[in-house]
Image (cartoon, rainbow, N blue to C red):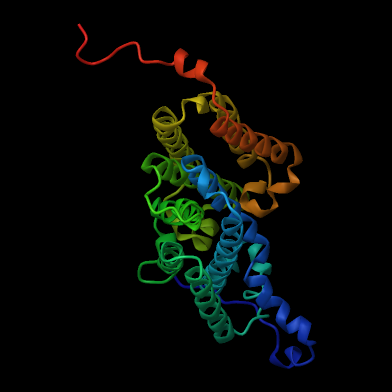
Length: 332
């Protein structure tokens, strides 16, 4: 499939721009507004503190701030690479065609340098926390390369595109977990649940994009995985990821914190509401950084987080008594 041509500004037009106007496109492709996704680091911190209350300290606050900076830098590095390599395909998207690179407002070699500088800074900042955080941030940077760069370019491969991008979710959690200074591995069931819910979010986004474009040929030109995807396949896969998330999270709560059973109805409603948002015309799930405009959903999401955190730290022995096993192996 041939890559489409990009629109561009005449070279003589660029020379008349002010310094701010020249820098602005490079700031835009770094997507600083996406740094909010670093909130996915925080559950790792919360669970680590639940496992060991002594981890809570002023040092943790400092290391959390440094880790969040490293995460922002590695994310921006990833986004710059994504913008450069996706520009020919973004030119075919009804909204993304107005991004700086398809419009010709960015000099591509400078953008590549921006990618490398941001990535290097991210690794240097992560190394100042500890070697485990450095290892995870390095893994995030590598996954960004595998997702975007040929011949691997996992974003072009159905299902693998979702799984390879959503793996950033548990990696973010691991940054939070390890920036506390804890050295043991986090619960595997929680890591898997975090991965599956990330995949769920990504599939809803794919479904919303497909419905927004509403043209199979144009959709496949924009995103090659759409050569295979259709609404039915995407809905089946989002169901799979939602169920897998629920099962892994259930394993975690039964093994580590049975009080979290009380959060299940709230989490289920969150999942259902997010699917509903995915089916809205011009769905906000296409650009998750703008979900804050869905005020009711945002308030509910914050309330869910509050319920989960509360149930982590408030003991309710009655819950354990209600859900005590009534059948044991070896009993006749």
